[in-house]
Image (cartoon, rainbow, N blue to C red; front, side):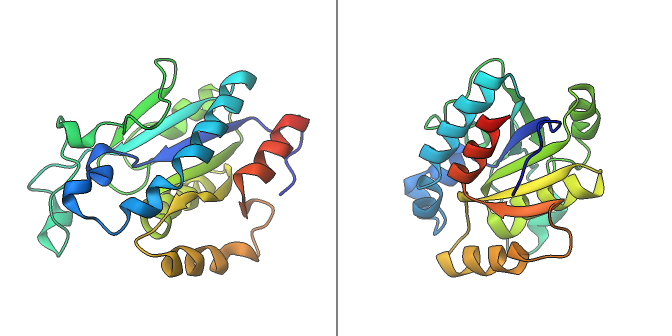
Length: 194
């Protein structure tokens, strides 16, 4: 993915909350999500150094939410410790913490306007889960006329096969270069050129 020197990126980190890293819950995504911590922390350092926005967007559900009327159990409830950013990430006070009521970081959060005020043109998306909240955030970035890149080693799903299948669907797509898949190292190399 080629990033021009006219682009202003933002790093959107999705649903890296304490509930998803709680070992006592035995979630199948937790070991995969742990592997994303180091590359996410590395990229946040680059974004901060360049003065580009870092956004931590986290689930902030309510126990009676519509989404819990199916098989999904209540988790990451607004105002609870479980809905806070995991301490394993290098969150800093100048970063933007954006609780969200549904899957996409753009849904009823005001994120589009906030990014426009910052002059952002490209959203680099990381976090969990690759095939749900990360993907819907990347797609909504496109729907709001931002370029998007989904970071393959900074995202995780409930299995490696689901993660890879999701990425493979979009590795070659007609929206490229408006939407692409990249590794954190490839993105960092591109960013450091600008």
